[in-house]
Length: 359
Image 1: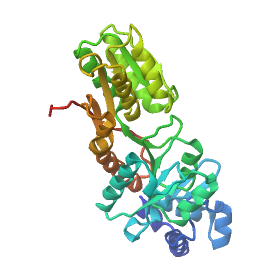
Image 2 (image 1 turned 180 degrees about the vertical axis):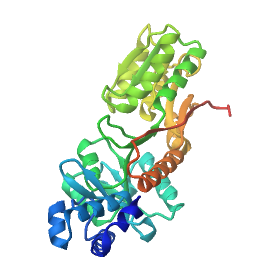
Image 3 (image 1 turned 30 degrees about the vertical axis):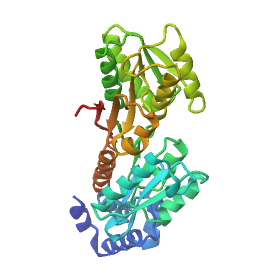
Image 4 (image 1 turned 60 degrees about the horizontal axis):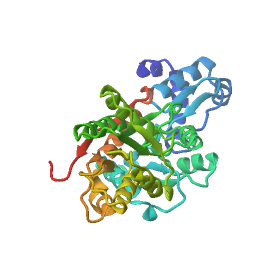
């Protein structure tokens, strides 16, 4: 179809098409910019309006521009060639340097680098903290990023990356109104597995110990747990707790009651550790007096998660792979770069329940 349109351009139109292609490839027309109006382009290049419309349709079919209602044609990052060193940007809501990130985000960025490297792509870490949306978009354009992985649900950051005209997706984050791909842990399945485990252990006074409402991961995991428990006729105690320093104090209060729960779903690393410390302080033994299920990525379980439980065993834990998430993100960006018009998808990384001493 693009070849047929190009054949109808004539010599003058073909010359204009090649010129605009070169301008996009050289970065003179940067991703996120809008081309002049059809009438202005026709006047500038001394061709007819119909010829300009055909040129724009050819550029659109090649993934170099996209029509935006009531705004015109926007330059996309398709010409930013990863095989020529144009990087993929990892955008995180932080002002800290990568070497000071927490173990989870450090490992996530490493896995993204490795997954990109397998395709011959380079990566760029870009902290959005402290930047205006315009500054963030400018940095992405100046780096000639060909795509972006967004590790934040900040709407301003998401819109700034989209405004740069990049193929992008949200990683470990989600907004209903984002309108872009997302790659996440399968929280619903993880919550279901955790609830089934407590039920199988005979727990009946089950408590949910987690983040306050408004957190996407919490809603996803709680939804899976509630579905399983409702089917068994169980109604869990819902305990929403702010992060440190309140977690351990709240856990101790919960476990000190005469009607304390006999099973706890603490489906975050810090929350599970807080429940364990509170149980230890009260003389409660996990697996005997209290059943607990935690949550952790496989890649940081041994060096970060396990030490948080002291001398005792690590409780049953819902695990997932950071590496699998990074590879899924890169695969989806490759598809998005090849076909910019793909409908947004929500991709979930598999989870499993890991118990000490069991394969």
